[in-house]
Amino acid sequence: IQTSVKNYKNLSFRTIYPDTKDEITIPEGYEWKILIKWGDPLDNNDGINYQNVFEKASNHDVERQKYCFGYNNDFVGFFNFKDKTLLVVNHEYTNPEIMFKDYFLRNQPTKEEVDFMIQAHGLSIVEIKKNKDGFFEYVKGYKFNRRITAETKALISGPAKGHKLLQTSYDPNGEFVYGTIANCSAGKTPWGTVLSCEENFHSYFGGDLENIEPEKMTDYKVVEIHQRYGVPDIKYHDYYGFYKYYDRFNVEKEPNEANRFGWVVEVDPLNPNRPPIKRTALGRFKHEAANTAIGKDGRVAVYMGDDERYEYLYKFVTKNKFDPNDREKNFNLLDEGTLYVAVFNDDFTGQWVEIASAYLENGKYIIKPNPKLPNIFQEDPVLCFIYTRKAADLLNATKMDRPEDVEYNYITKSVFAVMTYNEKRKASETNAANPRPENTMGHIIEIIEENHNPTSTKFNWRIALMCGDPKASSYNNKLFIYGQLAKSDVPPISAPDNIAIDKVGNVWIATDGNPGLDRLKSNDGVYVLNPFTKELKMFLSGVPNCEICGPEFSDDYKIFFCAIQHPGEGDLNATKWPYLNDNCPIPRPAVIQVKRKDGLEVYL
Ligand code: FEO
Ligand code: CA
Ligand code: CA
Ligand code: CA
Image (cartoon, rainbow, N blue to C red; front, top):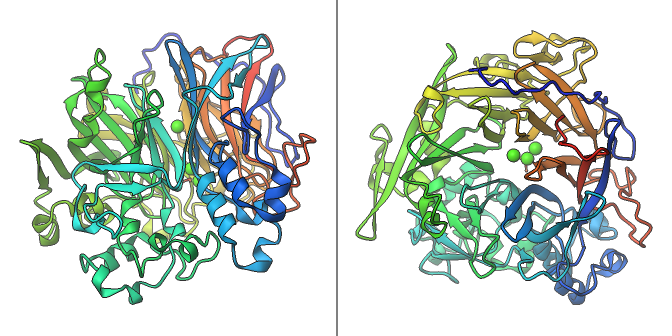
């Protein structure tokens, strides 16, 4: 890595250490505040009545959730457009066992509960304004405030549009779909849109693949494809129970509906009338995040992880160049380009191996699959985009330890790719890029693209962080920073997930996975890695049984945002955070903001 950058800074805040407290902990000299939480109204009406929803969700509550901030905030994106500042937040999933009284005892969601959950998924777009105290507050009733839910009409675009595997009885042309679900992390494009990522979509489908109604079978491959993606999660799965009330979530009745999820969804915060668009050229898998970087010739690279054990790291490169002077011209950039998957060699080199390229000629797609792919992909090249995991298997891509966030760092001119953990990896399955058997702690790989150019197809790589505890008794669980065993006063870290890069190149790391298995027995948190000084400090500790998501900064870097997702998950008595004394019987996910008390940049 080229450390020619002169302006890097040491981190001056004094590190905190992991804790199990039922409160947010941050370093001395900083303060925090809630920005927006589940149930806050985006319109001018009342917020959600949590007590009513908990006791017995009604159609009125469903109607209100349509206009209120959704549940389980994951990605957080800050956008400063000339005259307005917008926050875009993903609502990845719901915790019905927390939201609704005795949910598990009943083992049967009501239709109102299912409808409520459908509205609590998706995204929120909301205006925020800075207050005199230096914190932001959100603005109710603003004309750009918008909810996208699991039933908002979304368009299908790119090479897979119209394919027989995407046709359903309500959409025989395979060109639109109701809603987006399991939106985990995301990324921002240089033209000011969000690439929201559909991750664990399999959980929402029920039914038995052996009982598919024959007249609904448009392509016999659907069974094999669903099995490769784990659809449905459990045949008759009542946790969400969407399939009980809606046939499209039942694979027996609507076998192709699940093929219409697992995509990157582009959302334009500046145009409430533009529907979300599923960009199929970016491939179909359990998308964690999609972060862009502009190549030296102006083409755009999109880095993407498929977050499941032994899945892959991908990159898409657009055919055409980004035009900084014409926002609209960039809107179809992601419909033409080349999809690659990563191979990491044990000698610390690597390649982005082409899966397929897709471009338009006279309004028709020309798709060129990698010639090494077998006949099923040559005969029906669109499969490269729908059945991407299989194409990657066949190209011998490197099986990773659950790829989460991947971001290009413009200061180090390298890419940081997070592998959250994979406790199942056997010693015989290790490779240099996933070197730990039983990797319970996770690690972060740094990829240095050839010529530091995001559109290159070759790279070198090294491991920036092997997560763990410097004091761990087992060597496998110790903490290494750029190959050096961390000193005993460095805070332990495990299960890295989302990252954000600040103005001076520090990597801010949010974790998801404590307490769990062999990991730390403390709450999840936020850490900062300085890739120049190789320091690691802990910046924030969350509340019990939450994961921390969406680290993000305001454009002046004076506010740090993060999402407190699923507080209390797995233990109904763990927490009632955020304790607002407003008649809410349960904990609530929320986006919080942190600033320095002196108002300076948070990374100083
Ligand atoms: Fe929804 Fe991979 O985290
Ligand atoms: Ca994640
Ligand atoms: Ca990120
Ligand atoms: Ca995770």
